[in-house]
Image 1: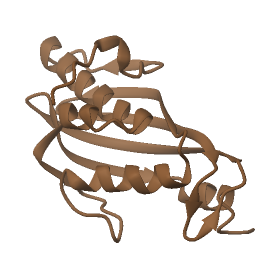
Image 2: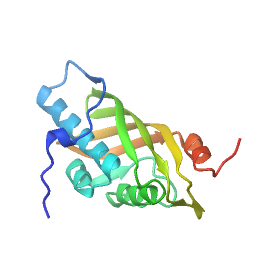
Image 3: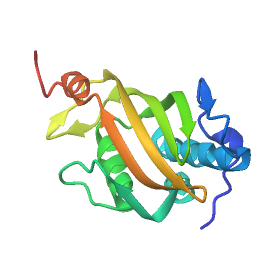
Image 4: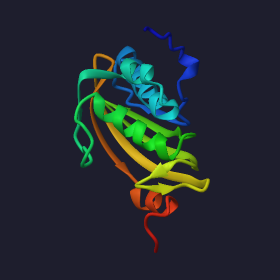
Length: 161
């Protein structure tokens, strides 16, 4: 099934900084790929992921237990949404340089599902992440990511300080 994704359906980054030496068409294709990738994280809709990533997608910071390739983000989203069904992803900042897009992200929602056998009680979830995407021909081919997992684990009640 093909789903039409309009530009307005994609998350709008707050500030976007583009290297002035970049070809503007390539820069816009990179921004659109990044926005589609984060629309997937914002909605869980796999049509956004299919639009954003190449079949050769490679996660360079693959967490233990997550499959490599295009199935990795799908798996992670399903696991995350089992714990936080109303998960949202906002793009707080986007930086486009060469073939890379760096994004500063904020994930929010409510822990109403389950995580590691623990049932959520509606606790708010609010944590940050940084991604570096390598984009070729308008598709994300590689990703490096770092999430504030300590904050997330505290909010999920898995870790106490």
